[in-house]
Structures are given as C-alpha cells and as structure tokens.
Length: 87
Ligand SMILES: [Fe+2]
Image (cartoon, rainbow, N blue to C red; front, side, top):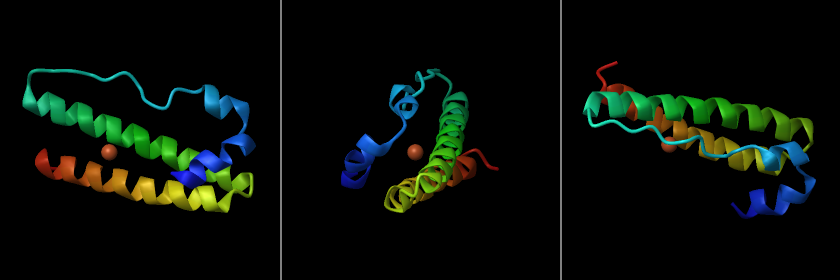
C-alpha cells in the first residue's frame, strides 16, 4: 500500500477521479448474495488488470507488482465464491 500511496503523484488525474468501490448490492437470498459477491470480485479483477497494464505503460513497475499481489487475492476470492456456488 505504501507503494501505491507513493506513486499517486505520478498517476494520471483521471485515475484519481474514478470511483474505486462500486455501490454495494444487497439481497436476503444467500445464493443471490454469493452471485453478487462473485460479480463484484470479477469486476475488481477486470479493474486491477486494467490498472496493471496502465502502470506498466507509465513504467511504474513497482506499482504494477503491488497491484498483481492484490489481483491474486481477488482471484482467490472469486474461486472461493465459484466453489461455494458449485461452479
Ligand atoms: Fe475480494
């Protein structure tokens, strides 16, 4: 996280204006909740993947590496949710 904070001054302003967290979805049905969580994880995976490519385009390889570690965690979360949903 220190790397991400330190790199903020070098990031394009449009990155800082974009929302990091989409609005949360809610449901009382557990399967629907799991599906919503999986959708959120897949959205995060797509956004982190895009940010990694952008960081590398800016030669911010240290930031790209930090983002890769976060991406790996998000992919684990998605796999756990898929398993819970029987996929
Ligand atoms: Fe996650």
